[in-house]
Length: 254
Ligand SMILES: C[S@@+](CC[C@H](N)C(=O)[O-])C[C@H]1O[C@@H](n2cnc3c(N)ncnc32)[C@H](O)[C@@H]1O
Image (cartoon, rainbow, N blue to C red; front, side, top):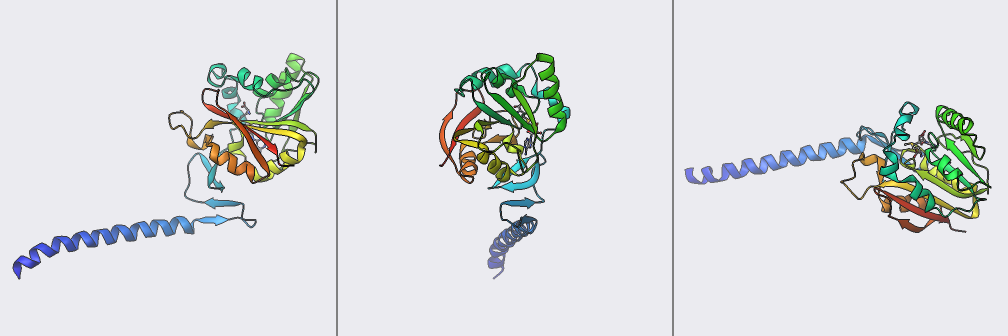
């Protein structure tokens, strides 16, 4: 009898411990679920438990990153960016025509807008941003360099304020992942496209854990394709020649 008790007690203790761990995990899961909320249209979910780099708002399973403030504008103009992102190669790969109208959404200081403008001398670049301070910097650079084919546009978090049916190519470089209302902004972009218009997304490769960029500032191809398809864009191709970014091309399903 004494022997029996000696062998069953440790087993009972293990079972009790496992039960306790299971209960704790269930409590944590309930807490996470209780802390999440879906908006009235069912597009976005908010969670109180989230990444410090994000805004606690989720779209199609992805947490949206915090917006990069205009006080960090110098980071966008860092000299090492030429080697890190190879913007000239990027622009050349867009196969632009001189008369094209290009919308650069989330233009920041216009780092890409001004490089694209050199390729569309008979057309123009609509440089959209939600921070007026970024547009001030674009206007300063325009004046400083006598550039006439870059047009700054103040967008809102839900509307890029682009003219309808007028854009040949809409491009977002290192920007889409921080749009707080990606579904609404993309709808605005799709309406601005000409029937043959294209959308290009350039994002750091989320599939590669060795790229030294915060997780919420990278995107996987799978996620980008899912989010573009939600607004009626079909994937055409992914160009992988850039050191750390995907260049993904989409067009409207007409
Ligand atoms: C990381 S910066 C990239 C700027 C630029 N594309 C570049 O590569 O240098 C992202 C920019 O997107 C802008 N942005 C964030 N949400 C936006 C939105 N909903 N519509 C337009 N721009 C937005 C921010 O204000 C910021 O200037």
